[in-house]
Structure formats: C-alpha cells, structure tokens
Length: 366
Image (tube, rainbow, N blue to C red):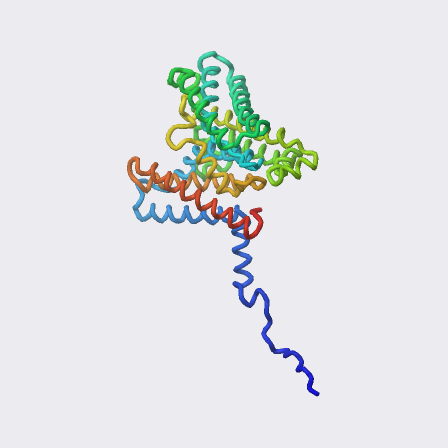
C-alpha cells in the first residue's frame, strides 16, 4: 500500500506578485491613473521643463519665463470658469454637455454692453442683469434636456446657433466700445500681490476677483451641499436616484441654469479683457466651448456622468493655458494658433481614452 507524498514546502509560491509588476510600481501606476490631480501635476511639470529647455536653447520666439506664464493666466480665467460650468452639466449624466456655452458668453456680453455701456446702468446692476440673462439662457437648455428629454448634444448645438445669431444681429454685428465699457479693462490688469508681490510676477486681477470665488463656490456646492450629492447621484444612476426621492429633472435643470450663470459672469470678464462687448466674444476663432469641454474631460470629469472634481478641472485649465502659451512661442505667425488646435485635439483624444481605461480598470478617478 502506497501513500501520497506530502506537498513540498519548497515549492514556489503562486500569486499576483509572481507574474505581475513589482508592488511599488503597480501602486504608483494605479495612483497616477486614479488620482487625476497627480497625473496633471506630472504633465504640468513636463510641459514647464520642456518649454523652459526650448526657451534656454533659443528655439522659442520669446522667453518662456515666470513673467510670461503669469500674464498667460489672463486666458486661464474664462476657460477654467467655463470648464467648471461644463463640470456641472456633464456630471449630471445622460450625455450632459453644453456646446452653447460660448454663444451664451457672446449674447450675455452684448446684453451687459447695452446695460452698462449704452443704457447707463450701474456696474453691479448690469453684472446682475448679465447673470440673470445667462441663467435664463441656460434654463432653456435645461428644460429641453431635463423635462422634454431632448439629447443634450443636439439641444445645445441648436441653441448655440440661435444664441450666436442673436448676439450678432442684436447690434447689427457691431461691438459696444463706449468709454464706460473700455474702463472695465482694469478688471483684467496684472497686479502686485501684497506682501510677497515684489518677489513674484504680477498676476492678473481676474484670478482673484473672478476665478478664485468661482472655484470656491462650485467646490462648496458640490462637496458641501445636498444639491451636490444629488447631482452626482443622478449622474451615476438617475433611476436609483429617483427611487431615493431625488427630483431628477429639477436637479439636472439647475445644472444647466448654473452653467448659464457662470457664462454670464465670464461675459463680464471677457468684456473687460477686450475693453469691448463683442458679438463673437465666445465663438470667434477656436471658441470657448470646445476648450472648456476638453479641460473638463482632461480634469477627470467622466463624460458618462457622476464623476468629477473641481481641483482636477483647475489644474487642467492651467496645464492647457501654459501649453498653449508655449506653442505660440514655438511657431511664428499664425501657425501657433493652428498647432494649438492640433494639441487640443490630441489632448482630448488622450484624456478620453485615459478616462475610459481608468473607469474600466479601476472604476474611475478620485
């Protein structure tokens, strides 16, 4: 009679460590993919080092230095604010997106120009009027999407054309550049930061008067209010949210209204930046909508809804702004703006693929 030999205690152990990458490398890759802010910081460092190296090597048409980077933030303000607006509507789910956001900027900018520049309204009253008009334009999108069930892509594309045409014809294609409007240029001037300003470059005033308050308010709304929890809930699963007592249509409608409100605030800033209320302020050239959507997606906002962080969007806005600033110095003439479009498209494809992979592999970003 024979008996089975006992299993050898010297046999190699089997398990994930025997076939997979080392544990520290796996954890590092996972952290980079799931924590979008970490990835964006790495990309930002890469862009800064790369462009600075090219600048010192004489390959750029101008210096890529702290003064230039600080002044470039004047363009980051409207892009970051509109990306936060896209964050709200995309997080709401069901294909949420707002292609009309740039046209809302144009139309509300013209309304603001009439109120403050031609009708003589006080500045605060004109700003409030622009915000209300922006909210109403956003509400049109919200009603069509949330209550009538129209696809957000088609709805906001239709309203984009409507708002853009109204902005053009409302003053016979002419900008409003009265002295009171031109004086608003001071809203976007670069200023010295108290106490430490002598040691660092001057920063555009709009960073403190427009961007920082907007970032804080949107963060508080999403992270510290019941509405923020409801918004993420309907974006994740609106059926489950309905059974939990959430009014899905009302919550989604409010996201589009808030996006319109932010666009109204951006219209005031852009009017000051150009010292003129222009009918094409949000739609000329590359426009503002597509870069804002790109920044939102790059910042970790899942296009399927329910996932997104304010910090990621803010870092993505700075990254895109400083990348575009470097591209303008890398190519002479109008070539720089064309390569900006190429870079924007490449970034959009990259972050869409990255988001899809991260969600499939790890369940999303944090």
